[in-house]
Image 1 (cartoon, rainbow, N blue to C red):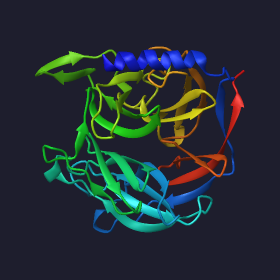
Image 2 (image 1 turned 45 degrees about the horizontal axis):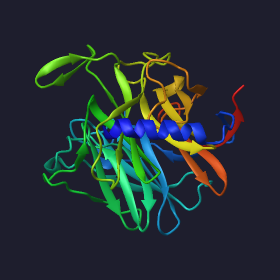
Image 3 (image 1 turned 90 degrees about the horizontal axis):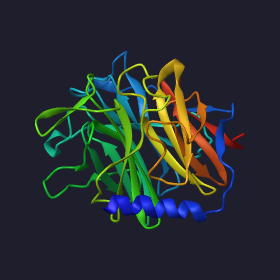
Length: 328
């Protein structure tokens, strides 16, 4: 019932906001690289790749970049977090700071399963939402550099998981006193998920979900906010057409960046909606644009928009300025 009320509430708000014209993001060509493929010491491999990441400004004013590095020697699922630090957002080649975090299996995280950190600051505390391979977890920090996991009443780090498998790529938006956590998940190759010891067939192989919270710790049931449409199955594997959700609010609209592909054929679609719980399931009605980038994070700094994204070769991370133009 709570979710139904939220949908009605934001649908109503959408009718009263000033009807500004929808816009689409446009990538400038002035990009600069901030991170390379790091030296992981004993965990290094020739196949390792920096992928999903988070960027934020620490308490001392420095810029922090944590990236999930995959295909390493770190545990069964090969992933860990590595950290870089820059003095200015516009500086190239931030300083490598070493491995920042590894999965803790004693807390329910899967071996080598850390995925996609996202950080925001509220008051004097930094909140990091991240994937533990099957679940979304939380860690906090006072300085924005050193994070401590938040342990739940069951002695683990899981906040929530499901309904699809491999819940990951969490990011959080605060609106009207509520926190909206967007994340993704996919099914098994045959389109099923396990539910009550039964294989349940799903309509979509991957989807973006959202849960809401008043306290950042206890979350509502999930709402599917984006899935299917023309992006479905344009990816190179069965679960990748709805990854890395990133949502911002701009001029009365919520804009969702939905990732379709990584690598040299990187592709990301954008959607504009007045309802933060509906970006289109099974249709493209809210689609406004596309960019040839992967796993983007949008940064608003000193009145400008910036976009950080993966190198096409998956060997580093870069930033560029972002413009907005009216949708024709």
